[in-house]
Image (cartoon, rainbow, N blue to C red; front, side, top):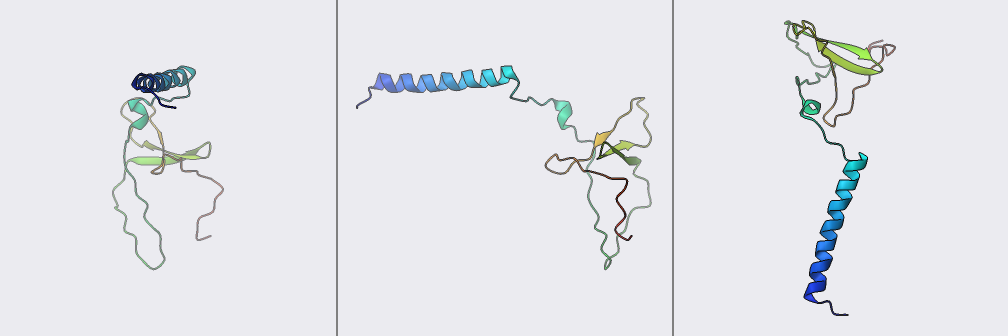
Length: 111
């Protein structure tokens, strides 16, 4: 079966139109999530200091002006001094946007 040039063009255009209609339908039904700029706000960066028994870990004596607390099993961080008048807190996540779980019942490693 030999396809003519017109048949090939019609197939390509039909495929493009089908893809566009699929994307529009998925967007209309809510299956495509559009993030807002507020979803990607990074307030601060944190790093983990390992607590190895064979090494000394030095921490600055200055306050970070942040406090952490546990809500619904996730670790949240907020500024200690909130001058904006609004309660601002953020969920601590890893590099893949997974929330860091917390537990009040978890014993410290030395216990």
